[in-house]
Length: 98
Length: 391
Ligand code: SF4
Ligand code: SF4
Image (tube, rainbow over all chains, first blue to last red; front, side, top):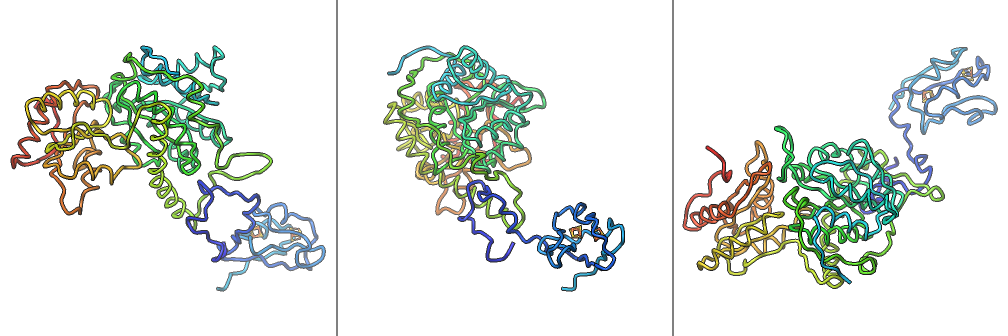
């Protein structure tokens, strides 16, 4: 959650209910990550296994390059499942340096 | 119009829930609460109360159902006691933290072990910090009235919190007393239809009871603390409004012959009725004794209590539960803490009485006033006194 978005206690809905549907998208939860997936797209056969296995649902085709998969790093947790499952081993996990 | 009738307190409470047109009753029977739930199931089965009666398999499920139905905007009632309340405990917190205006009767009873079906306040004292409004009734009329009032307060949009109405198991639940039973029109004039602050609605989806990550949790707890403390105003306002509608007045702290009293005894629950007799007897002998009846337990009425205790030379506090390993009983502990740091606080002597249904005859009150008299004359307060204990 971005710093400015953190509500004061007076700004919470009663019982801390979430009154805006799908507002979880606003929570940029990718900042827990200690590793990130990096693609070698030359080896990619576009099978979509990484898309299907990502527990975060943050791998999509065409986000960065037409017809090729990549992770939305605002949500990617760096779990490495995509890299583990990719049949052509074209995803590698690299340390976040920060 | 009100009708004067003789009714068992449990039946009077069930009838009150019926008059309030509860939409849902989800409860599991447990002694000594059973008659309330039994009678409500009859009212529903006989078509006298148009409500969903959910005969759940445990109290944990009872409160879970109540949370679900209250969240949809249904007026929801349950009742329990003792082990049932303890089993429910986990969900009791959730109901208040989600601001669900459920009304629950607690027929106060001891906790096991040893197994005891009889009355004391062990059950409710274990629920002190659950974030509900908690109030005590002393007789059948009060139990009936406060049940009706509880829906009004719980559903007040400034409050939107669940309310527990406590009354002593057996001493009240199984006692037949004369009561003034209001009619439906009177209750409807006092209790408007339930308009929830927010509710589960497929057309306007919201998430109730979400995960509270560390970034949000402290703010939610503070908000809960603030709303319960701020409920004090609406509590007194709605009690005044109740008095305008029904002619019977209730206050967070009530007193009996306390104005010029040098010795004050604080009670909570049905014992207050016996205590008043002893106060009368002692007053006839010229003793300046009085009674403070603590009606509202949460939010704790700090200011009102401080006002009535101010000026007393000694204060006795009755507890109907033991804080095992603690300094004094829970009520005395609260009152001592409330006055700590004040410019002057009268000595506070704690009496533990009536545990597990042990009878509390007038002699016990005489003994308590005697002991308080000794302290007023300069004696030591000492450890909490277990009145009537065989030593
Ligand atoms: S590392 Fe995990 S979260 Fe990130 S894209 Fe791969 S599978 Fe999804
Ligand atoms: S699993 Fe590997 S090969 Fe298949 S689409 Fe993803 S990156 Fe390409």
